[in-house]
Figure 1 (cartoon, helix red, strand yellow):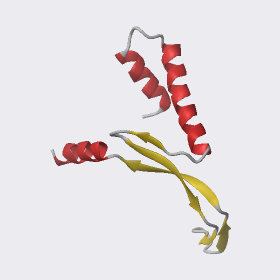
Figure 2 (figure 1 turned 90 degrees about the horizontal axis):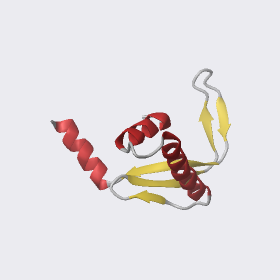
Figure 3 (figure 1 turned 60 degrees about the vertical axis):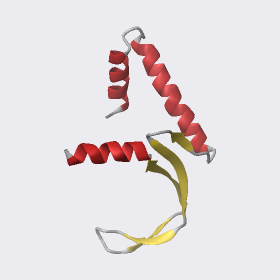
Length: 96
């Protein structure tokens, strides 16, 4: 699901809201989450999961095309851990 699809679905479920307001709300939520992750905070959505930032040290990797060694710089990467409710719902859905 893309951001625009999410906005359309929320707008369809809430016909009393203007589309532009739904778009502002979704953008504000994502911007706030992004700012929290930039600060190094953890963002937890109960029942859904938690977003955090992990540090990856620099390392020597391999270019898959040429096979030559490449230095991969240190970096911070986003990390998502699913919540128990989401995992349970997915596992129950898959089994049926």
